[in-house]
Image (cartoon, rainbow, N blue to C red; front, side):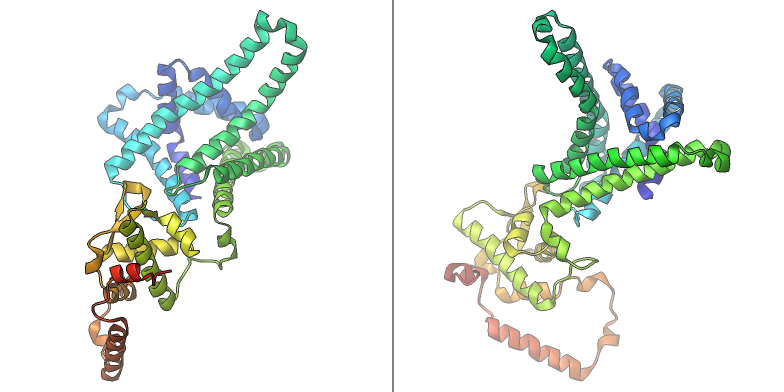
Length: 396
């Protein structure tokens, strides 16, 4: 619902920006056929809705908006992409390890808005022009009996292929996570087929019904448009879910809600992650990424992210390569004591909520907790370091 609301606000500004870019390169003629293809499930209302949108875009005079109005126009367009990215990252259970600044995100989104439509519609127009020339070229007259059916079939299938390709591109690029191409393609195919099927059902049983105009009168077309917009975003998010579960099928067996590790398992996995990162650095091998550690430990990515965040906040490891998420030790392994690592994992997220120390005061409990901490330090050894675990091979 949030995506629908943001789409309604950003639709005209986004189309205006795309139309201006395409018009500058002489490719604006391809925008209307693509929009008609997206609105096809509205059946008899398709042309009227498309005409209304294009009239609003054409009558939007950017020159009279001024600098503040132009910035507002761009911000509204960018806000839709930000909402899409947040939705995708929520499904992928991802929080950016290296948060992008406001200017960085704005520049990335702006590049996507300006360059994306030009590439997509240029490819769409180029393929259509290629098929047209192939059918009309005298060089192919000898093969007319073979080429013409292929061209006709390709022209019929081309819109569906571009829908699948668009979904695949979005599922591959937008999430702040490494997405496998095969998973993105599988999700794009499911979303593309769902788009066609739901569009046919919607056009047959809803847009073609006479009950909606009788009930809603002149509001019938906007309501049908918003319903189709809502169904479209459901299909997009369904494709994201399929892509995620195709890449990480083990999430299918988790219970609803966020993944949680017990305290004991957090200590074991966190210490093991520290040893694995240190071993690769010690041996001069390529550093681990978060996804590789998740696969090695056989636990969900979000759980590994929390462990890595706890180790990073205490200065044991650091992220290299920006958003790629490779991790190396932050200081000499011989100076990182195992007791410190375990203490950091045990105290993770203690500062998230301001607890009143007086409310926790109880002499008997405090004495027992103190003895437990002392027993752990004695069992681990005050001087045992991560380097010693790596050398002795105790981390496997």
